[in-house]
Image 1 (tube, helix red, strand yellow):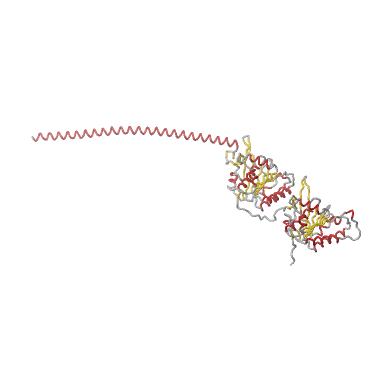
Image 2 (tube, one colour):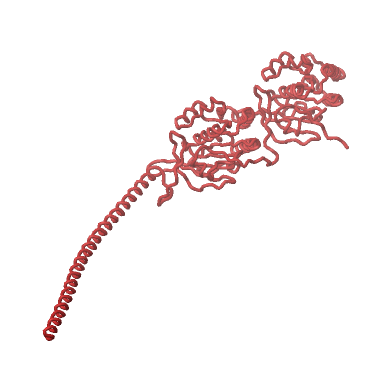
Length: 558
């Protein structure tokens, strides 16, 4: 059974992922692009990373820069070429070719180049080769047939030696390369692009072809900084993120209560939208501070204010960001939104997240990064996909203009797990703040609009107060509360007065009852005396009669 094409790790972050495991092993790869697109950097990174991380020495054949110049250039990116050369892990051969010194006479071939490359390969036992750039070899050659033949010979020679090769080429007009031939004889072609749109430069990479291997076909942004080159994949091929059953608090008790009392799911994405001055940054700040209190790390991307300004403003409302910045739990990344394009912002966010490994990320605000709606949505999709893959909870703030109302004008809300809307409520000649949960996936949440105030202890939600016209807030709420209080007090006074009247009447009735009882007792006493007299009188009469009878009977006996 025929074995599939082997792949060698490029060592370049992100590139191995979109190529399905690396560049083709033992085959040539063509890097084409304009001046300054990163061809030489990618080629040298391929060799240096192979030598440092995979034990594969390399040979770099250069036609434009000397070994000393390359050493200085790549030292700023963290590569010590002198040490690699001294350790026999890298060989650099500078071949100087001047077009003015080249004269086309007789047969033209690359036998001399093959000899030099072979010597360099044998000297270090190389497994990888880079040629930078191929145009220099054919600068004075005008015969297309010979050019095509020698290109094929060069690529075949590298294949026969089993070299994993990277060859750079300048981009041509209307073609990938100047000669328009190299891409046809290469097994893998990578196009590097450095474009400028709306005065903002963006670097992108695309795999044009990859013989015998599946690969990503999109354009991918890539970043060049002090740590070299890194490529940012567009998004995962599958929706297969691990999910957590843990909930994380927002740092605002009332908001957590609206979310079932436990906050958001860990690893979820939260959109906080609202007009200017509604408190979006304050809510995001409390979210990251709550994470720091839990012993987690938080990353705050600010695009409108400096870290010092945000910290000062939040300190005024009782949110101490500086404490956690000093403790190393919170890191601020503040960048002007117009400094880079969307792709570069995204690439740098990836880099910062990888370096700091936070559990919480806040982006304030999201839509200030510029770009059209489709670009912003694509960028946000990639960012959310990346954060979900790392189980990082994200809170993004977004300003919605009054004309837009609650409308989601770029459809970004569908990407979010939760959407918190802040609004300004105008009533009774004043403006108050309201908050509500529009959606929270997998969470039973409140459907009420709650008033919230920004105090010297942060954001606090007030319990809902319903009036005849709906939810009341601000001075209307205070007036209604006062009126209700007065009505309640009046009712209590009325009840108390009624109770007093009842008590007075009870006392009067009790007094009347007492008087009647006394009168009754007096009458009872009189009746008893009368009855007693009558009984005494009857008894006396009976005795007297008895005595009279007895006395008369005695006279008769005489």
